[in-house]
Image 1 (cartoon, rainbow, N blue to C red):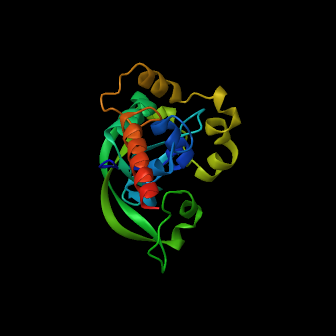
Image 2: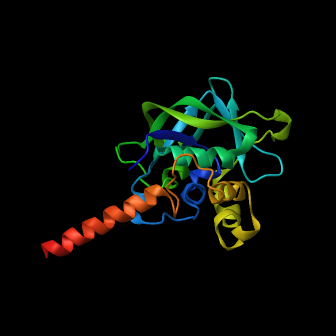
Image 3: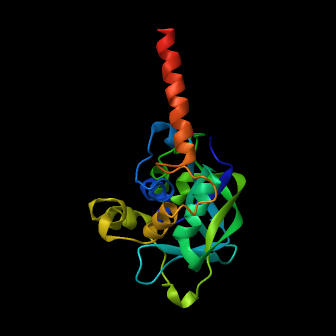
Length: 220
């Protein structure tokens, strides 16, 4: 049931709770089966730069010199419905484009960060080596550059000081695009069927889990 879309995230969506909130309507997967549909690992995008958006908790990425690079997460298994939600969440200041990124692996290790997605990003750049090149989609800033600060956006600072306002107890006071997604889903505008808590993929997963459970009981 996993989708065939691959995306590179470089900002708030690097945090799995934020990504889950967008695609599933809640900060944790509805079921363990949902969690298994996504695979997340560290990656790097070359010839781009990441900058802080003025008066915001999130960054922007835009093309830059070959010497510039942006570290983020590569997410595979995204569905058409996920991408539909992500497009709404990102809004018209960003444009989804295809890019080439390289998977990052720890030195002397073939293991990646699995579903968690945040652990390896805290490592120093020299602690990672670049692996295979992968085609992915990412959201490029297309609004005026005057809306951006000169400095780099700090993922660690976001997780430490601000993420609770997005998916924690303070999240009810924060919109940042979630409401646009929720409203579109509630209005039945999703052309893909979706896999949120009430989506068609959720219903199929629940059906499969029920069938597997009945088969297991019959075998005991």
